Image (cartoon, rainbow over all chains, first blue to last red; front, top):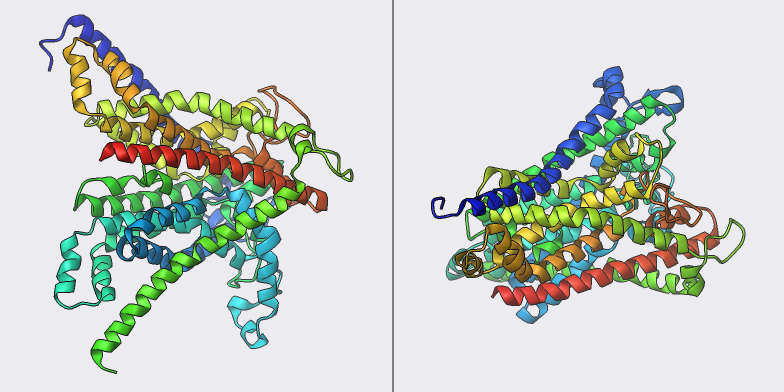
Length: 322
Length: 281
């Protein structure tokens, strides 16, 4: 390219590159800055507690005792619960839209599932408090006492607690998982299915073969949903009960990392308290970074092995449609 | 039962399950919308948009300050995010093969996955703590950070869709690269870029978590950017977890306004996306 360009043109080109590059540098700096700032603001707590911060489970700000294990537990429990509930449904939707339904029905269905992602978290939370919690409480009280003996159903039936949180998270995560799974299924070569049909496979068997072929991408889609659930804040804060006690029970009120930040951040009256909260934020940041990175890697490797990069846009479901 | 009919039955069962999940998923959507509309309509009136919040115990009042606050915070976020987002997107598409562009893309995707509450904590550290003051500016900064990656990635993708011949035509006429991009390529991709911005707006308009400890909240009307400011989402949150009946009603009304804003943005983006899809084929 160089050689034929005038010197003036070359200079403005360089200016253009540096100019736009400077703006992109801001974007990169923000990401680096988040990691740096969160580490800096949590040094006090990191130095004082070390790994014990994550191994102990007494959270008593008044006494200056900070053990974050209940939050990790609550975050993982609620997100895994959401994953378990949402995955079959999300995959069912993806398979139905990409393999089974008539063409005219595709767009409306895609639109409908994506609307689920458009509803703000706070609105889910509001609905959760006033509609879902009473419904779940009724379900909990009507449960036969034999089942109530089991550890996962123990505790008083309050309505608020892990079960509602898991349900709401599942609803919020479905559109993400299903839209990526749909893109992934699209990238399975037609020959894969045709081959199965030619061998006399039923519909289920052919789709199973396609799903198996796309397994890396499907796992990627599940992890993307998981990553979303980990960081979800408002809806969970409003329904999970906010009680820093580790419990296996679905009925027990618990706490998540994001929820403790939302509730206690403005109340932190000592530096140590604030640092402890920021450390929770730091770990949440790192965990989501790893989960999202892995998910992107899986989906990307799946898409790369086939045609083009449509499925690599791992973002909002609405964006996947752009 | 023969083996074949068993297999056929299994297949029918599977198809049935898939159809069932498609029916199941929109049920919560319908439920949420039903409650938001039916409960929200009852509390929504003209006063809601024009009046200030009343003290506890007095019924009535509105969220005028929060509606203005939301607009201010979103406006601040956009002014900050739109230039950064679009120009980053320009770099990513113009210098697509370079390492720095790949790094930018990676940063955008990473930022997109960062939980919004973590962005709140970050902004608290850089824009609230040093000044010992919650402010509308900090809230706008938090929302802006969330908008950047969406705008950048859409811009990039859409610039790559512009036919290469258009750019080459401009270059052949002696335009510099900057001129070709700003007068030919960007305008051609403009509808799509606006879609990206609207999409980003739809996503952040309903955000609460990053505002809790940046913009904070305010019972009074203010347009000062250096003061804490009320926003619809934070107001809905405070009202929803309060013990007062009247506040609950107002929270539903706030939720209805929020959902309307977000849906209008999503539908606009959707409509524009259709047209772009047409352009692509």
